[in-house]
Image 1 (spheres, chains in turn brown, orange, green, yellow):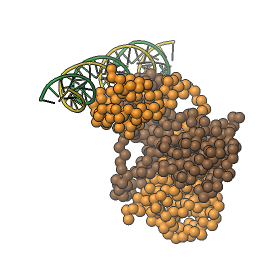
Image 2 (cartoon, helix red, strand yellow):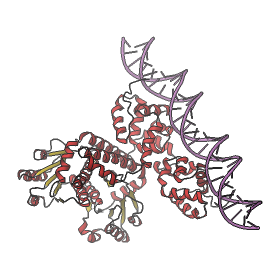
Image 3 (spheres, helix red, strand yellow):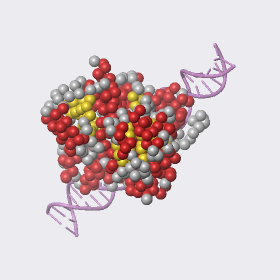
Image 4 (cartoon, helix red, strand yellow):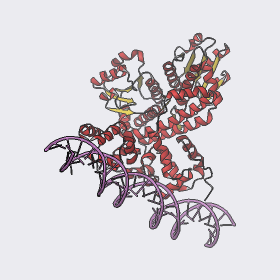
Length: 276
Length: 276
DNA sequence: CCTCGTATGGAATATTTATTCCAATTTGGT
DNA sequence: ACCAAATTGGAATAAATATTCCATACGAGG
């Protein structure tokens, strides 16, 4: 058996897998490289696809994809798939226990915590690719691209998200308006037909954000939304919703999926405007 | 063949399935009801589990779970599973074609863009985990945990980052103060010995942020910094710096690494405070 | 308490999917 | 252009998984 695929350690997390991928991709022969590059971009498909499907999508024979898995250190496709399926089955360790552990470990704690959050970020991004439909994103991008002004609202966690959009839109020259918490009640007065409202709110949903969405929607203005649950009341007033579910560590969520999604959206809107 | 499970229409979407579930659950025998109630609560498992797994989780024999699928109108478990897997692959019917197209064509749709940004997010997170040293993070976490107040500054892109820290600190009960752009010149007056300044700035570095760091550092106040380059001028005044390099797509960066790092930091600070 | 129809779970079978093998092809070196 | 080594893809085999069958257990109605 060839020992070119020397490092026999089996990746035990998405991070490790990606690291391995990056470390070995340059030494791989052509077809295996194809597998690597397709897989890297479509990690989310692994959990629900068969080898043949992945092989076909990568443009190679099943046996080649098989060898690709082995080159990564797995015994075969099933083992690699297990890594991705585990995420859905995984028992969520309760975070009381988790934080308690952090106390004891002291110095080692923060490093471990960072690794956990990074891993959780990977998972959020994978899940994002799973969940978001092309059409929804397209539709919203188009709606924003043709709007007179895009109004952004979001409070608390969501404010971080809209503030990043606001920065990007500003930098890109897309007309946008960030509404701050204090003035939100009056915000409706600055929104006119031809504008678009982008409302971001996560469970438990902010009353003010929902209210504003309702008010402007009733005036015939297009509303889009971003949330983390399909129970979000903004959905009732929105012509399209995006859902970004964030994985959590010890009960805390970073905003990887949301920020990635909104950054994409901003760039897409700009690209659409350029085209016309 | 029994016609109790009268409505033979195959559910074509998750909502139809749920409707059917709710409509038939009362007429089902005991074990099938078990399947129904477990399944309703764990729909997301179907895409990645085998019949036996679902059966065991529901507390029944595989053959019973099989009959449950049929009672719902499906020909068997595979058909039902297909419904859930389709979610992940957008269009089931032309799945294979679509994947083939995807791999040959670099179509510039929003879907492709999202995949690129997600990919870039993975890279940022990997580099984050490799770059950040345990000691630096530890040191900053300890410094913040023992501070009277943590002052947060950052403009433009960096503002998104500090605003998310501000939200988290607030939620966690860590005393923190977010300085907004307009008032920043006067901010120095509100910072006292025993406080800590956390300054975030990315290249090209914001003059105001650097200035503030210099001012308070010269007054003997501890400064920490987060940036994306080791040329950051805040480093001169800071007792410790964090560096988060963000990968980019077409010149645009999402903030995955920074947000992940600061979220980790916030949680670590809180955990350290709890200990004492 | 018996009887019949229904429900159940384990075991048998069919089907799909993963994995290995090997002949054909390509690649890189001389 | 030739050879040796590596890579590839299709076909064969192994394994896992879905699905059906049937003997047994159960429960409602007599």
